[in-house]
Amino acid sequence: MVSSADSSSGWSLVSRIAAAVCGGYALVSAWVVLCGAMSAERTQTILGGMQTSWPWYVAVVVWAFSPVPPRRIWGVLLGLLAFMLGTAALLVHWGGR
Image 1: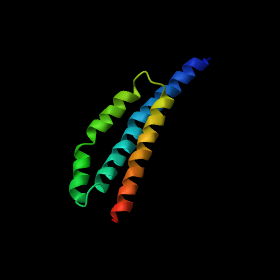
Image 2: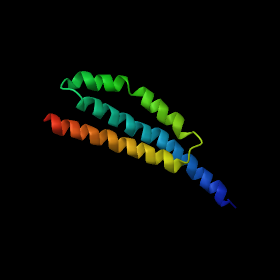
Image 3: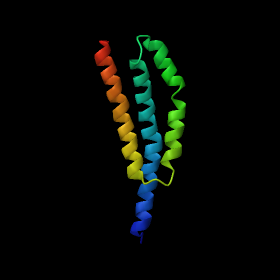
Image 4: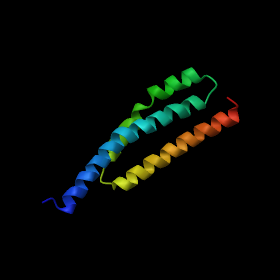
């Protein structure tokens, strides 16, 4: 029989892996979109965003396995994702592109 503590820690590990892989990918994608919205030279800024995205991904992977509760990890990831995409949308809207 599996105790609830074992089951909870199993779901915690699955949540951390999903945050590291899926959350990291989503955050890196939002970073590239934000970089593309920053300048009229979209090709150059998107390439720059892609080249500078790996520290974001590494930071998310390292942080996903820190002793922080998984709910906080997901909350911060979703908050950063919303902030980056919202800022990119505002930049595109105000820039008229």
